[in-house]
Image 1 (cartoon, helix red, strand yellow):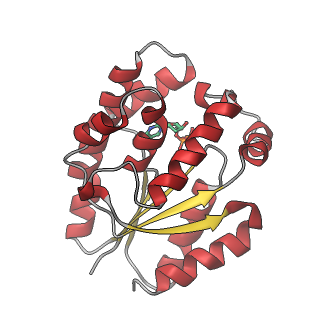
Image 2 (tube, rainbow, N blue to C red):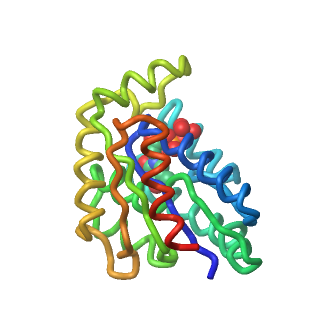
Image 3 (cartoon, rainbow, N blue to C red):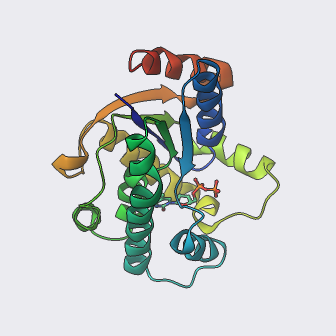
Length: 202
Ligand code: TYD
């Protein structure tokens, strides 16, 4: 079996770092791996990133674009990789749409427009207090995207991810196994906790 694993969390929770560490470990073991992310680098993902820098879309349109980007992602990258025997790790997936877009538009509708999204084998939530993530995001020294600027929004997103990881607020076809890791623990402890679980999938 070729697992499809997704990593979720608020901005600055360390998803990118942990996704890379997991990729390295799997490659060391001789596995074929696709590390990918949403929003993608494809045409829809590029529009989304433009919007995140300097907003011009309304909330429903943004939710539809994330769903469209995801369909392209699944069709062009994720499914072919799984089909060719790769271990797929996605840095963000449909649960980000429920947690982020679900703050602004009807959450059930967000589930509906993601009807064609595949269920991953495992979702990992890097759970972190936005007070900590805010420091990390600022330390990157990059211009902030507009979701990153708003701590109370990040607090709502965190609560939403926590609920999703308990099986709430999502359509049945997206319900999956969750591993929730306290992301304040430090890079190597978080890495080890993730590895404990991933090794059971191999
Ligand atoms: P992020 O993973 O933070 O990318 P980067 O680190 O390159 O900026 O994703 C960008 C933003 O997009 C982030 O604030 C979360 C948001 N997002 C959604 O609102 N909905 C979604 O479905 C996805 C995939 C991301």
